[in-house]
Image 1: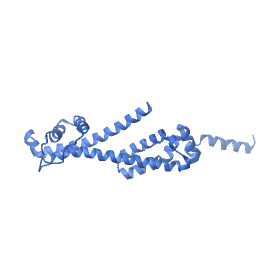
Image 2 (image 1 turned 90 degrees about the horizontal axis):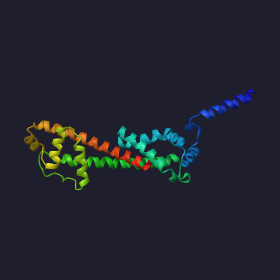
Image 3 (image 1 turned 60 degrees about the vertical axis):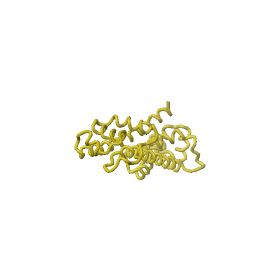
Image 4 (image 1 turned 45 degrees about the vertical axis):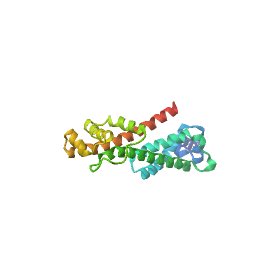
Length: 215
């Protein structure tokens, strides 16, 4: 084998072993993605995953939520790949558009969680029982009830008395015989746990939706 042939063979070997994300141009990657090539989806994630994560992290300010959004974005892109048209713009720009929509969805979900937690916390006012009304929707009360049931007993009792019985912290202290400071502590920790539980529940629902979509 000549020296030239050896060099050409070496170059061919390198191209065969080069990672997909490095060996494909954006146009080739987009075409393979549209055809349903999973290797191209992997390449997209490796090429633009950090961009998607950075956009989500800057908007949400939370690493875990940003990771969730990143996964949701690429899942949505894969499921909606038939809607991508190269004539309308680059694949990366299309991906950024999906990212912005999913960030908006995450912010809306965060607002919803905050409203549910605030509905429970509103009943913990020390000065008055006439705070904001309880959520009107039955589903809100069901969601709160399910997540309250998973809290430690003292925290569950304090929040349940506040949310369902309209008792203030002072009244809860008298009813339970606990010091007011203890009631405040249980309320604060319970609301924090409740917020996290609602966040985890949102993640579970998104995962279930994804599973159903692929089932």
